[in-house]
Length: 119
Image 1: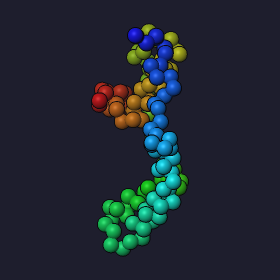
Image 2 (image 1 turned 180 degrees about the vertical axis):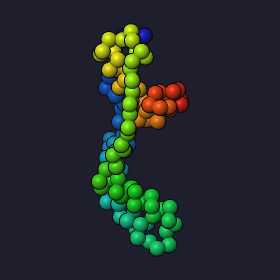
Image 3 (image 1 turned 135 degrees about the horizontal axis):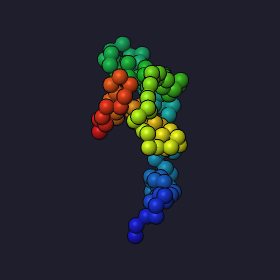
């Protein structure tokens, strides 16, 4: 049966993974949060841990405690003569899509202009 245009094939989203006793994997993992944090701190503080492991533990702790750092982006996009047949709403949607692809690293830019998709 084909999907209707504009309708999701899975409107409820992905089903949660549950164990035999009905508990979700997410719930089980969260029960070990304190132990996982203690492990990361242990790796961080252990003098004989490789430097890469200590950096990874530090990064994980900082990301979870403070959130990942914001990334700045300088972006100039000229729409002159590039999207002439689109109305302003369509042009705005297209520019938003291009910006999202740039943010994900899927588009290469040359002098501020999308050059080609990397994927």
